[in-house]
Length: 167
Image 1 (cartoon, rainbow, N blue to C red):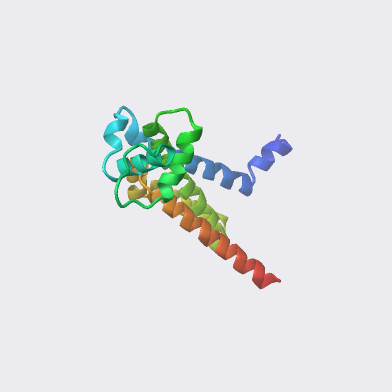
Image 2 (image 1 turned 120 degrees about the vertical axis):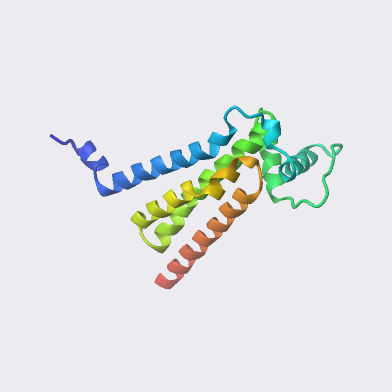
């Protein structure tokens, strides 16, 4: 005998949301996997280190100012550095991985707005497994923030356009 609660979860909506949850967890796991057992200092280097230095400069004006860096991602990092009681390398990597998973969720939302929920799941799965996004998500770069902001703008544009067409 199937209870109403079980019937609700076995419905198409329930299965789509369960599959989306599995996709998001898989995306998070794949993005976190390259970090396992690796020194965080070896991951944060080059541009990522300069982003961290600029974020630390925003918090303490006496620290070293790196040249020629845009302040978008470092401003996000500075806010996280000020709030969270962890070391800066860990915060930078965790925020980058979290933004990578956010990209997968936003990709689903965009595909649902353009197509339907089934295609949203397919597109989210492709985003979760896309090698470039997976392999670069833990490096502490600004790419995930840029893609997240771009997807949010596209979603808002589509929703604004559809709401103005309705009425």
